[in-house]
Amino acid sequence: MNAPPLSPSSPVLLDAIVVGAGFSGLYQLLLLRDKLGLSVKVLDAAQGVGGTWYWNRYPGARCDSESHSYAYYFSKELLNEWEWSERYPQQPEILRYLNHVADRFDLRSDIVLGTKVQSAHYGDTDKRWHITTDTGQTYSAKYFITAVGCLSSANIPTISGLDSFSGQWFHTGEWPHEGVDFKGKNVGVVGTGSTGIQAIPVIAEQAKHLTVFQRTANYSIPARNMPLDDAFKRYAKENADHFREVMTTNTNAHPFRLSERLAFDFSEAERNQIYEEAWLKGGLQFRASFKDLLQNSDSNQTAADFIRNKIRQTVTDHVKAEQLSDIDHPFAAKRPPIDSGYFETFNLTHVDLVNLRETPIESITPRGIKTSTTEFNLDVIVFATGFDAMTGSLLKMDIQGRHGVSLQKTWQAGPLNYLGLQVPGFPNMFTITGPGSPSVLCNMPPAIEHHVEWITNCIEHLQKNKMDSIEASQHASENWVATVNAAANETLLPQAKHSWYLGANVPGKPRVFMPYPGGFLRYRTTCEEIVNKGYAGFIVGSE
Ligand code: NAP
Image (cartoon, rainbow, N blue to C red; front, side):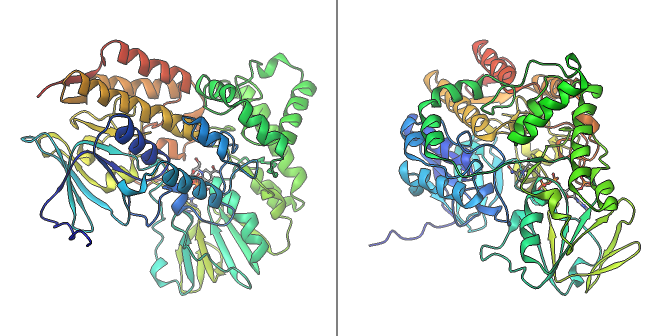
Protein backbone atom coordinates (compact mmCIF):
# COMPACT_ATOMS: atom_id res chain seq x y z
CA MET A 1 0.00 0.00 0.00
CA ASN A 2 1.22 3.50 -0.80
CA ALA A 3 1.97 5.73 2.15
CA PRO A 4 -0.73 8.38 2.64
CA PRO A 5 0.27 11.82 1.34
CA LEU A 6 1.94 13.96 3.93
CA SER A 7 -0.33 16.54 5.41
CA PRO A 8 0.84 20.07 4.62
CA SER A 9 0.12 20.98 8.22
CA SER A 10 2.75 18.52 9.51
CA PRO A 11 6.23 19.61 8.53
CA VAL A 12 8.78 17.00 7.52
CA LEU A 13 11.46 17.13 10.22
CA LEU A 14 15.00 16.88 8.93
CA ASP A 15 18.59 17.67 9.78
CA ALA A 16 19.13 19.58 6.55
CA ILE A 17 17.28 21.03 3.59
CA VAL A 18 19.18 21.70 0.40
CA VAL A 19 17.58 23.89 -2.27
CA GLY A 20 18.58 22.96 -5.82
CA ALA A 21 19.43 19.66 -7.51
CA GLY A 22 22.28 20.74 -9.76
CA PHE A 23 26.01 20.05 -9.37
CA SER A 24 26.03 21.56 -5.86
CA GLY A 25 22.86 20.08 -4.44
CA LEU A 26 23.59 16.54 -5.60
CA TYR A 27 27.03 16.44 -4.02
CA GLN A 28 25.84 18.18 -0.84
CA LEU A 29 23.12 15.56 -0.43
CA LEU A 30 25.60 12.75 -0.93
CA LEU A 31 28.03 14.05 1.70
CA LEU A 32 25.52 15.05 4.36
CA ARG A 33 23.54 11.85 3.98
CA ASP A 34 26.22 9.23 3.36
CA LYS A 35 29.24 10.74 5.12
CA LEU A 36 27.57 12.39 8.11
CA GLY A 37 24.45 10.22 8.28
CA LEU A 38 22.07 13.18 8.41
CA SER A 39 18.47 13.20 7.25
CA VAL A 40 18.39 15.46 4.21
CA LYS A 41 16.02 16.39 1.39
CA VAL A 42 16.85 18.33 -1.74
CA LEU A 43 14.02 20.48 -3.08
CA ASP A 44 13.94 21.68 -6.67
CA ALA A 45 11.28 23.44 -8.73
CA ALA A 46 12.29 21.53 -11.87
CA GLN A 47 10.86 18.19 -12.92
CA GLY A 48 14.35 16.72 -13.17
CA VAL A 49 17.81 17.04 -11.66
CA GLY A 50 20.47 19.18 -13.37
CA GLY A 51 19.99 22.74 -12.09
CA THR A 52 21.33 25.20 -14.65
CA TRP A 53 21.64 22.40 -17.18
CA TYR A 54 18.01 21.44 -16.73
CA TRP A 55 16.83 24.91 -17.75
CA ASN A 56 19.43 26.15 -20.25
CA ARG A 57 18.43 24.12 -23.32
CA TYR A 58 18.78 26.89 -25.90
CA PRO A 59 20.27 26.04 -29.31
CA GLY A 60 24.04 25.65 -29.07
CA ALA A 61 24.09 25.42 -25.25
CA ARG A 62 27.37 23.96 -24.22
CA CYS A 63 29.90 24.53 -21.47
CA ASP A 64 33.07 26.49 -22.11
CA SER A 65 35.07 24.50 -19.59
CA GLU A 66 36.68 21.49 -21.22
CA SER A 67 34.70 18.36 -20.52
CA HIS A 68 37.43 16.44 -18.68
CA SER A 69 37.47 19.30 -16.15
CA TYR A 70 33.74 19.93 -16.02
CA ALA A 71 33.06 17.01 -13.77
CA TYR A 72 33.17 15.87 -10.17
CA TYR A 73 36.60 14.72 -9.08
CA PHE A 74 35.60 13.26 -5.70
CA SER A 75 35.09 9.76 -7.06
CA LYS A 76 37.72 7.90 -9.08
CA GLU A 77 35.12 5.33 -10.10
CA LEU A 78 32.84 8.03 -11.47
CA LEU A 79 35.74 9.64 -13.33
CA ASN A 80 36.73 6.32 -14.83
CA GLU A 81 33.32 5.18 -15.93
CA TRP A 82 32.07 8.39 -17.56
CA GLU A 83 33.03 9.16 -21.18
CA TRP A 84 32.72 12.70 -22.55
CA SER A 85 32.31 12.80 -26.30
CA GLU A 86 33.52 16.31 -27.22
CA ARG A 87 36.11 18.82 -26.10
CA TYR A 88 33.31 20.97 -24.60
CA PRO A 89 30.25 19.13 -23.33
CA GLN A 90 26.85 19.97 -24.80
CA GLN A 91 23.91 20.63 -22.50
CA PRO A 92 22.19 17.23 -23.14
CA GLU A 93 25.42 15.40 -22.31
CA ILE A 94 25.92 17.33 -19.05
CA LEU A 95 22.31 16.62 -18.12
CA ARG A 96 22.85 12.90 -18.81
CA TYR A 97 25.96 13.03 -16.62
CA LEU A 98 24.10 14.60 -13.68
CA ASN A 99 21.29 12.07 -14.05
CA HIS A 100 23.89 9.33 -14.01
CA VAL A 101 25.35 10.78 -10.79
CA ALA A 102 21.88 10.88 -9.21
CA ASP A 103 21.33 7.20 -10.10
CA ARG A 104 24.83 5.95 -9.35
CA PHE A 105 24.82 7.36 -5.82
CA ASP A 106 21.17 6.52 -5.25
CA LEU A 107 20.25 10.14 -4.62
CA ARG A 108 16.77 10.29 -6.13
CA SER A 109 14.90 9.02 -3.10
CA ASP A 110 15.96 12.16 -1.23
CA ILE A 111 15.24 14.64 -3.99
CA VAL A 112 11.80 16.23 -4.12
CA LEU A 113 11.19 17.61 -7.62
CA GLY A 114 8.48 19.95 -8.82
CA THR A 115 8.72 21.76 -5.51
CA LYS A 116 9.54 25.43 -5.34
CA VAL A 117 10.69 26.86 -2.04
CA GLN A 118 8.58 29.89 -1.23
CA SER A 119 9.99 30.83 2.15
CA ALA A 120 12.61 29.82 4.67
CA HIS A 121 12.27 31.43 8.09
CA TYR A 122 14.59 30.92 11.04
CA GLY A 123 12.75 30.26 14.28
CA ASP A 124 14.27 32.30 17.11
CA THR A 125 12.68 29.99 19.65
CA ASP A 126 13.27 26.50 18.24
CA LYS A 127 16.48 27.46 16.33
CA ARG A 128 15.31 25.65 13.23
CA TRP A 129 14.61 26.66 9.65
CA HIS A 130 10.96 26.48 8.61
CA ILE A 131 10.46 26.02 4.91
CA THR A 132 7.26 26.42 2.91
CA THR A 133 6.83 25.26 -0.68
CA ASP A 134 4.38 25.76 -3.52
CA THR A 135 3.07 22.20 -3.13
CA GLY A 136 1.86 23.03 0.39
CA GLN A 137 4.33 20.65 2.01
CA THR A 138 6.39 22.27 4.74
CA TYR A 139 9.75 21.26 6.20
CA SER A 140 11.68 22.00 9.34
CA ALA A 141 15.45 21.56 9.41
CA LYS A 142 18.42 22.52 11.50
CA TYR A 143 20.57 23.43 8.49
CA PHE A 144 19.38 25.35 5.46
CA ILE A 145 21.69 25.11 2.46
CA THR A 146 21.14 26.95 -0.80
CA ALA A 147 22.49 25.27 -3.91
CA VAL A 148 20.57 27.49 -6.31
CA GLY A 149 23.33 28.26 -8.81
CA CYS A 150 24.86 31.61 -9.66
CA LEU A 151 23.18 32.10 -13.02
CA SER A 152 19.68 30.79 -12.62
CA SER A 153 17.34 33.73 -12.32
CA ALA A 154 16.45 34.91 -15.85
CA ASN A 155 16.87 38.61 -16.58
CA ILE A 156 13.99 39.41 -18.92
CA PRO A 157 14.19 43.06 -19.92
CA THR A 158 11.19 45.21 -19.16
CA ILE A 159 10.59 46.61 -22.62
CA SER A 160 7.20 48.22 -23.11
CA GLY A 161 4.84 46.32 -25.38
CA LEU A 162 6.25 42.82 -24.84
CA ASP A 163 2.75 41.62 -23.90
CA SER A 164 1.41 42.84 -27.21
CA PHE A 165 3.87 40.84 -29.35
CA SER A 166 1.89 38.49 -31.59
CA GLY A 167 4.77 36.09 -32.24
CA GLN A 168 6.61 33.82 -29.80
CA TRP A 169 9.28 34.99 -27.38
CA PHE A 170 11.68 33.05 -25.16
CA HIS A 171 14.45 33.64 -22.65
CA THR A 172 17.40 31.30 -23.22
CA GLY A 173 17.51 30.32 -19.55
CA GLU A 174 13.89 29.10 -19.58
CA TRP A 175 13.93 27.28 -22.87
CA PRO A 176 10.95 25.04 -23.76
CA HIS A 177 11.72 21.33 -23.52
CA GLU A 178 10.12 20.62 -26.87
CA GLY A 179 12.53 23.07 -28.55
CA VAL A 180 11.69 25.94 -30.89
CA ASP A 181 11.28 25.55 -34.62
CA PHE A 182 12.97 28.49 -36.37
CA LYS A 183 12.52 27.12 -39.90
CA GLY A 184 11.12 29.70 -42.31
CA LYS A 185 10.90 32.31 -39.54
CA ASN A 186 12.14 35.84 -39.02
CA VAL A 187 14.02 35.67 -35.75
CA GLY A 188 15.45 38.40 -33.54
CA VAL A 189 18.09 37.69 -30.88
CA VAL A 190 18.63 40.33 -28.19
CA GLY A 191 21.96 39.98 -26.38
CA THR A 192 25.51 39.12 -27.32
CA GLY A 193 26.97 37.64 -24.13
CA SER A 194 28.24 34.04 -23.87
CA THR A 195 24.73 32.71 -24.46
CA GLY A 196 23.86 34.83 -27.49
CA ILE A 197 27.27 34.13 -28.99
CA GLN A 198 26.62 30.37 -28.69
CA ALA A 199 23.01 30.50 -29.89
CA ILE A 200 23.32 32.94 -32.83
CA PRO A 201 25.27 30.63 -35.23
CA VAL A 202 22.92 27.72 -34.54
CA ILE A 203 19.73 29.80 -34.91
CA ALA A 204 21.16 31.29 -38.14
CA GLU A 205 21.40 27.78 -39.62
CA GLN A 206 17.65 27.34 -39.24
CA ALA A 207 16.02 30.75 -39.51
CA LYS A 208 14.83 32.37 -42.73
CA HIS A 209 16.20 35.66 -41.46
CA LEU A 210 18.05 36.55 -38.28
CA THR A 211 18.44 40.02 -36.79
CA VAL A 212 20.94 40.33 -33.95
CA PHE A 213 20.30 43.24 -31.59
CA GLN A 214 23.66 44.17 -30.05
CA ARG A 215 23.92 46.65 -27.20
CA THR A 216 27.54 45.94 -26.25
CA ALA A 217 29.99 44.39 -28.68
CA ASN A 218 31.93 41.48 -27.22
CA TYR A 219 35.23 39.72 -27.58
CA SER A 220 35.08 36.04 -28.42
CA ILE A 221 37.71 33.38 -28.96
CA PRO A 222 37.13 30.35 -31.19
CA ALA A 223 36.29 27.33 -29.05
CA ARG A 224 37.70 24.82 -31.59
CA ASN A 225 35.34 22.19 -30.34
CA MET A 226 35.97 18.67 -31.64
CA PRO A 227 35.15 15.07 -30.84
CA LEU A 228 37.47 13.57 -28.24
CA ASP A 229 39.51 10.64 -29.48
CA ASP A 230 40.25 7.54 -27.44
CA ALA A 231 43.82 8.60 -26.81
CA PHE A 232 42.71 11.84 -25.11
CA LYS A 233 39.98 10.11 -23.13
CA ARG A 234 42.58 7.64 -21.83
CA TYR A 235 45.08 10.44 -21.13
CA ALA A 236 42.48 12.43 -19.14
CA LYS A 237 41.65 9.42 -16.98
CA GLU A 238 45.23 8.37 -16.42
CA ASN A 239 46.14 11.92 -15.42
CA ALA A 240 43.10 12.70 -13.29
CA ASP A 241 45.24 13.28 -10.20
CA HIS A 242 47.39 15.73 -12.08
CA PHE A 243 44.37 17.64 -13.40
CA ARG A 244 42.84 17.76 -9.96
CA GLU A 245 46.08 19.13 -8.54
CA VAL A 246 46.27 21.82 -11.22
CA MET A 247 42.61 22.80 -10.84
CA THR A 248 42.75 23.14 -7.08
CA THR A 249 46.01 25.09 -6.95
CA ASN A 250 45.56 27.77 -9.57
CA THR A 251 43.62 31.00 -9.93
CA ASN A 252 40.63 29.83 -11.96
CA ALA A 253 40.14 26.09 -11.25
CA HIS A 254 40.64 25.25 -14.91
CA PRO A 255 43.02 22.44 -15.86
CA PHE A 256 45.68 24.87 -17.09
CA ARG A 257 47.89 27.43 -15.40
CA LEU A 258 48.14 31.13 -16.13
CA SER A 259 51.39 31.88 -17.94
CA GLU A 260 54.18 33.53 -15.94
CA ARG A 261 54.99 35.73 -18.97
CA LEU A 262 54.31 39.48 -19.01
CA ALA A 263 52.98 40.89 -22.27
CA PHE A 264 55.69 43.54 -22.62
CA ASP A 265 58.55 41.13 -22.04
CA PHE A 266 58.09 40.29 -25.72
CA SER A 267 58.33 42.20 -28.98
CA GLU A 268 55.08 42.93 -30.79
CA ALA A 269 55.81 40.18 -33.33
CA GLU A 270 56.61 37.61 -30.63
CA ARG A 271 53.53 38.57 -28.64
CA ASN A 272 51.26 38.28 -31.66
CA GLN A 273 52.77 34.87 -32.40
CA ILE A 274 51.84 33.78 -28.86
CA TYR A 275 48.30 35.10 -29.34
CA GLU A 276 48.09 33.41 -32.75
CA GLU A 277 49.02 30.04 -31.27
CA ALA A 278 46.45 30.50 -28.48
CA TRP A 279 43.83 31.56 -31.05
CA LEU A 280 44.44 28.38 -33.06
CA LYS A 281 44.33 26.24 -29.96
CA GLY A 282 41.07 27.95 -28.97
CA GLY A 283 39.12 28.19 -25.74
CA LEU A 284 39.56 29.98 -22.44
CA GLN A 285 43.32 29.36 -22.42
CA PHE A 286 43.68 32.42 -24.66
CA ARG A 287 43.32 34.66 -21.61
CA ALA A 288 46.11 32.73 -19.87
CA SER A 289 48.59 33.80 -22.59
CA PHE A 290 50.14 36.44 -20.32
CA LYS A 291 50.04 36.86 -16.58
CA ASP A 292 49.20 40.57 -16.56
CA LEU A 293 46.27 40.79 -18.97
CA LEU A 294 43.81 41.60 -16.20
CA GLN A 295 46.19 43.82 -14.23
CA ASN A 296 47.80 46.08 -16.78
CA SER A 297 45.70 48.15 -19.22
CA ASP A 298 48.44 48.37 -21.83
CA SER A 299 48.99 44.61 -21.73
CA ASN A 300 45.27 44.05 -21.98
CA GLN A 301 45.14 46.39 -24.96
CA THR A 302 47.51 44.10 -26.89
CA ALA A 303 45.09 41.17 -26.52
CA ALA A 304 42.11 43.40 -27.28
CA ASP A 305 43.76 44.73 -30.46
CA PHE A 306 44.65 41.21 -31.58
CA ILE A 307 41.02 40.08 -31.25
CA ARG A 308 39.62 43.23 -32.87
CA ASN A 309 41.89 42.61 -35.87
CA LYS A 310 40.65 39.02 -36.07
CA ILE A 311 37.04 40.28 -36.10
CA ARG A 312 37.84 42.75 -38.90
CA GLN A 313 39.60 40.01 -40.88
CA THR A 314 36.70 37.60 -40.43
CA VAL A 315 33.67 39.81 -41.06
CA THR A 316 33.59 40.88 -44.71
CA ASP A 317 30.99 43.65 -44.40
CA HIS A 318 32.90 46.73 -43.30
CA VAL A 319 30.06 48.28 -41.29
CA LYS A 320 29.26 45.04 -39.42
CA ALA A 321 32.97 44.47 -38.75
CA GLU A 322 33.30 47.93 -37.19
CA GLN A 323 30.21 47.48 -35.03
CA LEU A 324 31.28 44.02 -33.84
CA SER A 325 34.79 45.18 -32.99
CA ASP A 326 33.80 48.46 -31.31
CA ILE A 327 34.19 46.97 -27.83
CA ASP A 328 34.00 49.29 -24.82
CA HIS A 329 35.67 47.22 -22.07
CA PRO A 330 39.01 45.51 -21.49
CA PHE A 331 39.36 41.94 -22.73
CA ALA A 332 38.09 39.45 -20.09
CA ALA A 333 36.74 42.19 -17.83
CA LYS A 334 33.40 40.62 -18.68
CA ARG A 335 33.22 36.83 -18.78
CA PRO A 336 35.02 36.13 -22.11
CA PRO A 337 32.85 34.01 -24.42
CA ILE A 338 34.19 31.31 -26.69
CA ASP A 339 32.38 30.48 -29.91
CA SER A 340 31.85 28.21 -32.85
CA GLY A 341 31.55 30.42 -35.91
CA TYR A 342 30.06 33.52 -34.24
CA PHE A 343 31.75 36.25 -36.28
CA GLU A 344 31.54 34.15 -39.47
CA THR A 345 27.75 34.07 -39.06
CA PHE A 346 27.60 37.78 -39.89
CA ASN A 347 28.89 36.96 -43.40
CA LEU A 348 25.62 35.15 -44.15
CA THR A 349 23.32 37.29 -46.28
CA HIS A 350 20.26 36.50 -44.14
CA VAL A 351 21.92 37.72 -40.90
CA ASP A 352 21.73 41.40 -39.95
CA LEU A 353 23.22 43.30 -37.05
CA VAL A 354 21.47 46.19 -35.31
CA ASN A 355 23.64 48.42 -33.17
CA LEU A 356 21.47 49.39 -30.20
CA ARG A 357 24.02 51.99 -29.09
CA GLU A 358 23.08 53.98 -32.20
CA THR A 359 19.43 53.02 -32.45
CA PRO A 360 18.09 51.81 -29.08
CA ILE A 361 15.03 49.62 -28.69
CA GLU A 362 12.01 51.83 -28.00
CA SER A 363 9.30 49.22 -27.68
CA ILE A 364 8.01 45.86 -28.72
CA THR A 365 5.02 46.03 -31.02
CA PRO A 366 2.58 43.31 -32.10
CA ARG A 367 4.83 42.81 -35.17
CA GLY A 368 8.29 42.88 -33.68
CA ILE A 369 10.97 45.16 -32.21
CA LYS A 370 10.87 48.91 -32.79
CA THR A 371 14.11 50.81 -32.49
CA SER A 372 14.50 54.59 -32.70
CA THR A 373 14.59 54.31 -36.51
CA THR A 374 13.00 51.05 -37.65
CA GLU A 375 10.34 48.48 -36.84
CA PHE A 376 11.71 44.96 -37.39
CA ASN A 377 9.06 42.38 -38.25
CA LEU A 378 9.73 39.19 -36.31
CA ASP A 379 8.06 35.82 -35.77
CA VAL A 380 10.26 34.88 -32.80
CA ILE A 381 12.24 36.97 -30.28
CA VAL A 382 15.00 35.27 -28.30
CA PHE A 383 16.17 37.12 -25.20
CA ALA A 384 19.76 36.07 -24.52
CA THR A 385 19.80 38.81 -21.91
CA GLY A 386 21.45 36.97 -19.06
CA PHE A 387 20.64 36.58 -15.41
CA ASP A 388 20.06 38.38 -12.16
CA ALA A 389 23.33 36.72 -11.21
CA MET A 390 24.50 35.42 -7.84
CA THR A 391 21.78 37.02 -5.72
CA GLY A 392 18.62 36.80 -7.87
CA SER A 393 17.58 33.25 -7.02
CA LEU A 394 18.29 33.76 -3.32
CA LEU A 395 16.33 36.99 -3.10
CA LYS A 396 13.36 35.47 -4.93
CA MET A 397 12.82 33.19 -1.94
CA ASP A 398 11.44 34.84 1.17
CA ILE A 399 14.40 34.10 3.47
CA GLN A 400 14.25 35.51 7.01
CA GLY A 401 16.94 35.11 9.63
CA ARG A 402 17.01 36.06 13.30
CA HIS A 403 14.17 38.32 14.51
CA GLY A 404 12.39 38.02 11.17
CA VAL A 405 14.96 40.15 9.34
CA SER A 406 14.78 39.40 5.62
CA LEU A 407 17.67 38.68 3.30
CA GLN A 408 16.34 41.48 1.09
CA LYS A 409 16.85 43.94 3.95
CA THR A 410 20.27 42.57 4.90
CA TRP A 411 21.38 42.83 1.26
CA GLN A 412 19.81 46.21 0.54
CA ALA A 413 23.22 47.73 -0.14
CA GLY A 414 24.64 44.56 -1.73
CA PRO A 415 25.27 40.96 -0.72
CA LEU A 416 26.83 41.18 2.74
CA ASN A 417 28.39 37.76 3.43
CA TYR A 418 31.42 36.00 4.80
CA LEU A 419 33.49 33.98 2.31
CA GLY A 420 30.41 33.61 0.12
CA LEU A 421 29.37 30.89 2.54
CA GLN A 422 27.30 32.58 5.24
CA VAL A 423 25.30 35.73 5.91
CA PRO A 424 25.32 37.46 9.33
CA GLY A 425 21.98 37.05 11.08
CA PHE A 426 21.21 33.77 9.32
CA PRO A 427 22.49 30.99 11.62
CA ASN A 428 23.09 27.55 10.11
CA MET A 429 22.33 28.81 6.62
CA PHE A 430 25.01 28.15 4.00
CA THR A 431 25.14 29.49 0.44
CA ILE A 432 27.03 27.17 -1.93
CA THR A 433 28.99 29.38 -4.37
CA GLY A 434 27.25 32.41 -2.92
CA PRO A 435 28.24 36.00 -3.69
CA GLY A 436 31.68 36.66 -2.26
CA SER A 437 33.08 33.31 -3.42
CA PRO A 438 35.29 32.85 -6.50
CA SER A 439 32.65 30.58 -8.13
CA VAL A 440 31.80 32.21 -11.46
CA LEU A 441 35.38 33.34 -12.03
CA CYS A 442 36.32 29.67 -11.86
CA ASN A 443 35.59 26.41 -13.56
CA MET A 444 32.50 25.69 -11.46
CA PRO A 445 32.74 22.01 -10.44
CA PRO A 446 35.99 22.35 -8.43
CA ALA A 447 34.60 25.51 -6.79
CA ILE A 448 31.42 23.63 -5.92
CA GLU A 449 33.30 20.60 -4.58
CA HIS A 450 35.34 22.89 -2.35
CA HIS A 451 32.27 24.60 -0.89
CA VAL A 452 30.32 21.40 -0.39
CA GLU A 453 33.26 19.78 1.39
CA TRP A 454 33.86 22.90 3.52
CA ILE A 455 30.21 23.01 4.61
CA THR A 456 30.20 19.27 5.33
CA ASN A 457 33.36 19.53 7.42
CA CYS A 458 31.91 22.52 9.25
CA ILE A 459 28.70 20.66 10.14
CA GLU A 460 30.75 17.62 11.16
CA HIS A 461 32.82 19.88 13.42
CA LEU A 462 29.65 21.25 15.06
CA GLN A 463 28.24 17.76 15.59
CA LYS A 464 31.47 16.33 17.02
CA ASN A 465 31.92 19.24 19.39
CA LYS A 466 28.30 19.29 20.44
CA MET A 467 27.86 22.75 19.03
CA ASP A 468 24.56 23.87 17.75
CA SER A 469 25.08 26.77 15.46
CA ILE A 470 27.42 28.70 13.25
CA GLU A 471 26.88 32.18 11.95
CA ALA A 472 29.07 34.72 10.19
CA SER A 473 29.83 37.75 12.31
CA GLN A 474 28.79 41.18 11.06
CA HIS A 475 32.34 42.48 11.36
CA ALA A 476 33.96 39.60 9.45
CA SER A 477 31.31 39.89 6.75
CA GLU A 478 31.84 43.60 6.28
CA ASN A 479 35.58 42.99 6.08
CA TRP A 480 35.10 40.21 3.56
CA VAL A 481 32.98 42.37 1.23
CA ALA A 482 35.72 45.02 1.46
CA THR A 483 38.36 42.35 0.70
CA VAL A 484 36.43 41.20 -2.38
CA ASN A 485 36.08 44.73 -3.68
CA ALA A 486 39.71 45.59 -2.94
CA ALA A 487 40.80 42.46 -4.85
CA ALA A 488 38.56 43.51 -7.76
CA ASN A 489 40.11 46.98 -7.73
CA GLU A 490 43.56 45.43 -8.18
CA THR A 491 42.31 44.21 -11.57
CA LEU A 492 40.64 45.66 -14.64
CA LEU A 493 37.42 43.76 -13.88
CA PRO A 494 35.44 46.77 -12.52
CA GLN A 495 36.13 48.63 -15.78
CA ALA A 496 33.37 46.64 -17.50
CA LYS A 497 30.66 49.00 -16.37
CA HIS A 498 27.69 46.90 -17.55
CA SER A 499 28.94 43.62 -16.19
CA TRP A 500 26.79 41.20 -14.24
CA TYR A 501 29.80 40.69 -11.92
CA LEU A 502 28.90 44.16 -10.62
CA GLY A 503 25.15 43.64 -10.72
CA ALA A 504 25.08 46.39 -13.35
CA ASN A 505 22.94 44.40 -15.81
CA VAL A 506 19.85 44.54 -13.62
CA PRO A 507 18.17 47.94 -13.15
CA GLY A 508 18.20 49.03 -9.50
CA LYS A 509 20.60 46.32 -8.31
CA PRO A 510 23.34 47.68 -6.00
CA ARG A 511 26.72 48.00 -7.73
CA VAL A 512 28.96 45.74 -5.69
CA PHE A 513 31.58 43.46 -7.19
CA MET A 514 30.15 40.06 -6.24
CA PRO A 515 32.57 37.20 -7.03
CA TYR A 516 35.89 37.00 -5.16
CA PRO A 517 38.60 37.80 -7.74
CA GLY A 518 41.67 36.94 -5.65
CA GLY A 519 42.02 33.48 -7.19
CA PHE A 520 40.84 30.03 -6.25
CA LEU A 521 44.04 28.96 -4.47
CA ARG A 522 44.18 32.12 -2.36
CA TYR A 523 40.53 31.69 -1.49
CA ARG A 524 40.89 28.03 -0.54
CA THR A 525 43.92 28.89 1.58
CA THR A 526 41.98 31.66 3.34
CA CYS A 527 39.08 29.30 4.08
CA GLU A 528 41.50 26.73 5.48
CA GLU A 529 43.29 29.28 7.67
CA ILE A 530 39.97 30.48 9.07
CA VAL A 531 39.05 26.91 10.04
CA ASN A 532 42.48 26.38 11.59
CA LYS A 533 41.94 29.49 13.68
CA GLY A 534 38.80 27.91 15.13
CA TYR A 535 36.40 29.31 12.54
CA ALA A 536 37.63 32.87 13.00
CA GLY A 537 34.99 35.41 12.02
CA PHE A 538 32.18 32.95 12.66
CA ILE A 539 30.15 32.83 15.84
CA VAL A 540 30.10 29.17 16.77
CA GLY A 541 28.35 27.85 19.78
CA SER A 542 25.56 26.10 21.57
CA GLU A 543 22.45 28.09 21.94
P1 NAP B 1 25.23 38.25 -20.20
O1 NAP B 1 26.66 37.95 -20.27
O2 NAP B 1 24.73 39.07 -19.08
O3 NAP B 1 24.84 38.92 -21.59
C1 NAP B 1 23.56 39.44 -21.77
C2 NAP B 1 23.50 40.18 -23.09
O4 NAP B 1 22.21 40.73 -23.23
C3 NAP B 1 24.48 41.33 -23.16
O5 NAP B 1 24.92 41.47 -24.48
C4 NAP B 1 23.60 42.52 -22.75
O6 NAP B 1 24.05 43.75 -23.22
C5 NAP B 1 22.31 42.13 -23.43
N1 NAP B 1 21.16 42.77 -22.83
C6 NAP B 1 20.69 42.64 -21.57
N2 NAP B 1 19.60 43.40 -21.39
C7 NAP B 1 19.37 44.01 -22.57
C8 NAP B 1 18.39 44.93 -23.02
N3 NAP B 1 17.43 45.37 -22.22
N4 NAP B 1 18.46 45.36 -24.29
C9 NAP B 1 19.44 44.93 -25.10
N5 NAP B 1 20.41 44.08 -24.74
C10 NAP B 1 20.37 43.62 -23.49
O7 NAP B 1 24.34 36.90 -20.19
P2 NAP B 1 24.65 35.47 -20.83
O8 NAP B 1 25.15 35.62 -22.22
O9 NAP B 1 23.45 34.64 -20.62
O10 NAP B 1 25.83 34.94 -19.99
C11 NAP B 1 25.80 34.99 -18.58
C12 NAP B 1 26.86 34.09 -18.03
O11 NAP B 1 26.42 32.75 -18.10
C13 NAP B 1 28.17 34.09 -18.77
O12 NAP B 1 28.94 35.19 -18.50
C14 NAP B 1 28.76 32.78 -18.30
O13 NAP B 1 29.31 32.92 -17.04
C15 NAP B 1 27.53 31.90 -18.25
N6 NAP B 1 27.41 31.16 -19.51
C16 NAP B 1 28.32 30.19 -19.74
C17 NAP B 1 28.25 29.49 -20.90
C18 NAP B 1 29.24 28.44 -21.14
O14 NAP B 1 29.78 27.84 -20.27
N7 NAP B 1 29.54 28.20 -22.37
C19 NAP B 1 27.29 29.76 -21.85
C20 NAP B 1 26.38 30.75 -21.59
C21 NAP B 1 26.45 31.45 -20.41
P3 NAP B 1 25.00 44.68 -22.27
O15 NAP B 1 26.33 43.98 -22.28
O16 NAP B 1 24.98 45.98 -22.93
O17 NAP B 1 24.37 44.68 -20.91
